[in-house]
Length: 300
Image 1 (cartoon, rainbow, N blue to C red):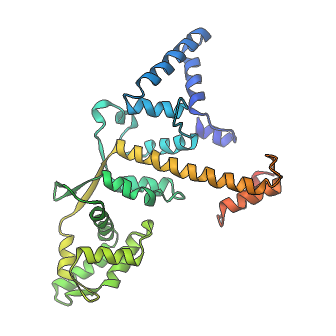
Image 2: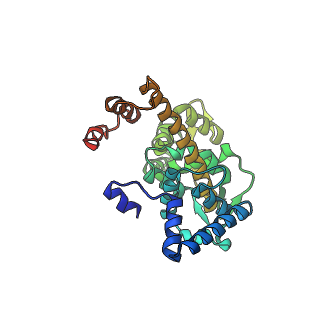
């Protein structure tokens, strides 16, 4: 339905509108529709404190406190469509411990929400909730800093494997037993480009995890680190909750930004601005976006 409305240039259906339409189509008669709507809303309010799934529906319907914006619902539905399991199963009581890898989570963020940088905003929150599997056993008591080190180093291992193999071959052939830390740091930075790591952060990772002499990393300690592989896993329900929390922060910040832009454009405080002022607001909001040309085209 939303896709069709997008094509037609119409506003999308809100959750409460969809709910009412569903009730009307299912029960037809006004009296029955009203009665069932009342019973449904009463049940949602009653049981929302006992079940997080019902409470989430309450928020999406805009009932009571902590209403969730339509844009966040759209983002939430996009995530549901891209999970490695049917979203119908997620909400079954027996499946609420279903796990997915952290890499799956980040792929959804990066591919479906490229302009939000949500992978950076959410990394710490997700890592705190992740279990870390090492050599087919869960590591206990691993702190956030250590988890982040492992996460970024594993990114290097999988994304820069050619460079890693060259180091391994040189070490085995006794061509070298150490490597300039800046060379390795550069490779780690490239592998983690989606996370905006700077050189100082990477150098701290290297110092915490490997044997270093001056500006050289001893390859025996470096290569041994990657003998066993690490896998990060998180409950899908936890991933969904973190996503909602992050999107709530993002859209709240956007609301404040747009409100400030509007107030600057509405210098007379009349609640109305001319098209030229509106175009200026959109230009500021889009920045250097390649889509700026679409403003004038859209409002022709």
